[in-house]
Picture (cartoon, rainbow, N blue to C red):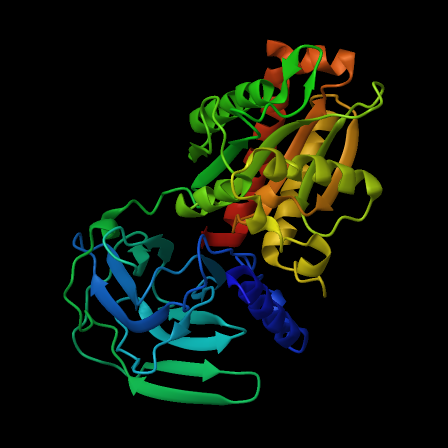
Length: 435
């Protein structure tokens, strides 16, 4: 079994376990669809959890030391004083020992569930804390920056009666180890350069914009126009809107006329720590009368029309990619067997897709062909909420003129921007930080 087959087998086992543990879906499985860039490797292991005060005295840093770089994680606020930090496809090292927590962390537990490691962090109820998760640029470690809001408390060096628990769970057994802890400075004296990052940093930090096709792949061609040129123009307009009006970093999979393999686009978004992936395209049809916008998210194709669009977009791999055989096991029906895609990532993708279509219909006044799901290769390897937007039909003469006009491109980019703005507002209400 090659690396992709092994990955599918492991995901299927996770799903079968999850069917008897439905509660794991309540907080979402963002990152379930992670695809490795190469051969399958062992999951990262957490060897230690350490606590150290920030160098500016305005908070604490919780460092999770690992044997490898976790592909994705999700940090959620359960309530005002409780956090849940999910490290996907990560486990505890066999020699891991619970360490005394420090600062605002009163206790924490680690639970192994369906192949993922869950850290539940209980914070001191007497202090208001803003939490933000980051990757350490100098190692594979993950960092949780706990910034005091308002006046910072005076550190205490004497332990109290709070406890730290480490719990390892499987579907049948559970073992728990408890250690005494304190709320003081903790045992680690290390300093971290990311600890001083402002707690006001946007929670939805990075949007990856993917102008479809490019280079030797022109995409749809009609009326003397090329899809690759139109979507690049719209992508730049969209990126300018987001960068100038929202506190969000914009990353492009391509900024000029070049070809990029479909699988690599998603991997690129993962490496850049994207929180939202938007692939921009225009449509084509045999009928010159076909028109309208539609937005797709990853899932099982439910209509013939969706399958046709998927087939056209996915045909790139056979026509232009040097190694098309790597997609041989990307069988959409097998991949989603058992509703494998029921995850928070899928739900967030559908939510954003709906926002895009609502803007196109109500603000841009385009015909909406709705929200659909299909197995687009370009979305499969992205481990964050992802959509593919079809801006209109290049094969329709009237829409082609609109798609090629500065006015049309501006309106379409503005519609997607408004969807991003609304999604960011809702996203930041529900998530402390996500990657």
